[in-house]
Image 1 (cartoon, rainbow, N blue to C red):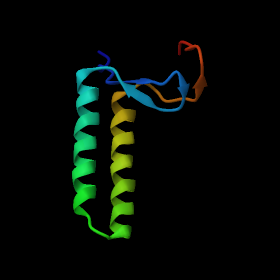
Image 2: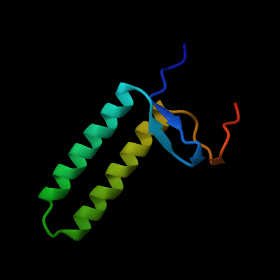
Image 3: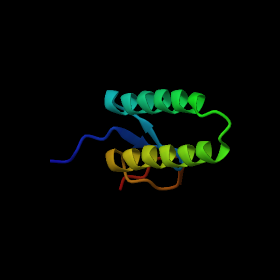
Image 4: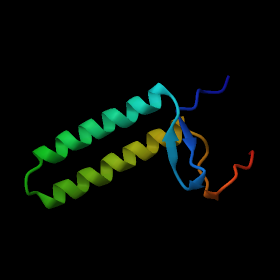
Length: 80
């Protein structure tokens, strides 16, 4: 049985958008944690950059694992 897709491939460009409550929960939790940690990292530019890099990589990994196969497209969806 195929896993339920939380994120659908975008119609224009490359990336995903949430289509289930699980996908939206991932986005909201990520945004909450990102915002609250960034507010508490004071004037430490290197630490902020490292945190941004790691948190975005984690979000991309979750989208990749729980979403459709990513590919660049521009317009009408071609069936795989």
